Image: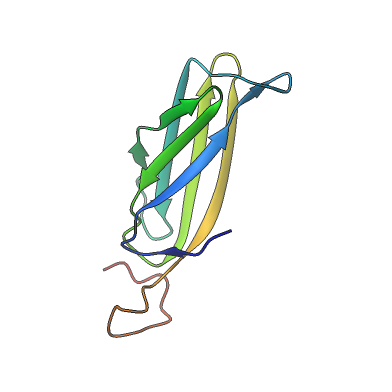
Length: 102
């Protein structure tokens, strides 16, 4: 997995399958939030091919980034995860405080 840096555009990808075959749900949503935020942010995903969805966004802060995908109807799928967002090496002052939202 590639490293993820604050203030750098990134893309998360999800695949949806129905009985092992790539399939498009009726609607797909992608949401993310930083560990010190309460509200989820929505991103409209793109659908480059059947069953494959990409969500491109820019995390603002270093720390833990939580995300979740939801597909409605057939196939109805929900998945979630987290990633560590690192502070840019070019940002000063350098710190190891990963929960300090600016």
